[in-house]
Length: 143
Image 1 (cartoon, rainbow, N blue to C red):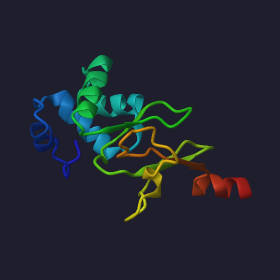
Image 2: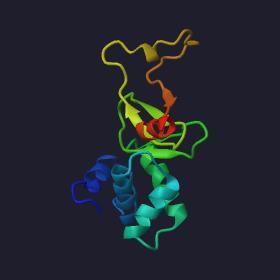
Image 3: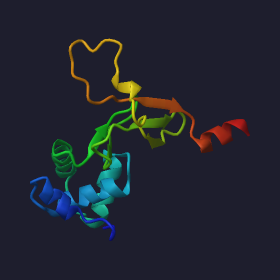
Image 4: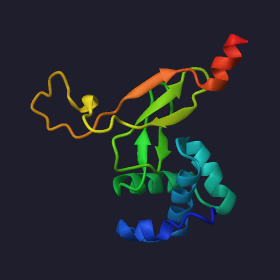
């Protein structure tokens, strides 16, 4: 487990029981932003060899429901999880290698929250995905 991160207060603050699988999964998500479920399972099993795949899926669902992690699903990609929650940030995805990075939303006026037609909805969040090539893939293509 990562010594600088303490999952227990976050779990208690979300009224979730502190269990070894929950601590391990939440820690894995904090250590590996934008990781897919298989990567999280591998990371968790490094500490808890006997944890089941279903247990990890159940914990991810509970953590997402509690607002401790965010599930993102870029087009053509498996679901990914991140610990950065509570803000309206976006993502940039590399078309070549699939690397994902956070992109902060505009500060002040947020044009992404002003839809051309809101259909009567009260919009409080926008999910924007930027696509392109990461620096490594851009360099490899130009070589």
